[in-house]
Amino acid sequence: MAEAANAQWQVYRGNGQFLTDQVLYKRDHRIFPGNSWSYADVLYTIVGNKITTGSSGSVFDLVYTCEDGKLYSGRGMYTSEIAYTFANGKIYKGNSTFSLDILYNIRDGVIYPGDHSFPLDAIYVITGKYTDVDIFAILLSLQLIT
Image (cartoon, rainbow, N blue to C red; front, top):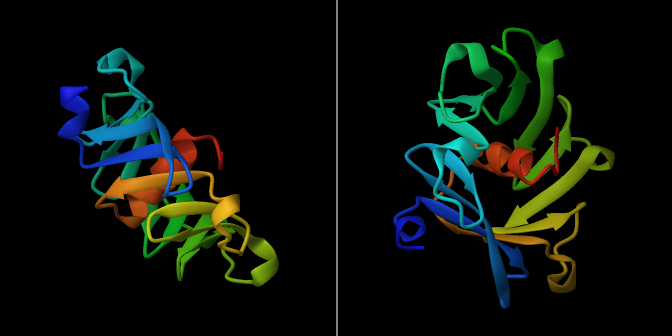
């Protein structure tokens, strides 16, 4: 648990008032599940604005690229590759900021499903500093987006 304390952020199940168990944390640009410290268990690695699978960070493991709040599949060269958009604290499906396309919203580090931020609806809490690319990597790691 001491290594997890050095993480740049942690994600807990809960509503912000009541943190239950740690489900993810970031250390050395890598996202680990819960209380695992093994590099074999790394879910994703963040290299700049790129998200790769596993712990290598190799371009051969590239799955997503984040640019200007948009998550592109692969290298992210075309607007047709935009899988998700993060704008104004909300995650949208595709290249959209239309209210019907809202999947999640993040307010004060708390992740809520849909457009509303009711305390009882909170599903996860992020502690520590995070970026747009971290948000997408967290949602991927939690399998809230694919």
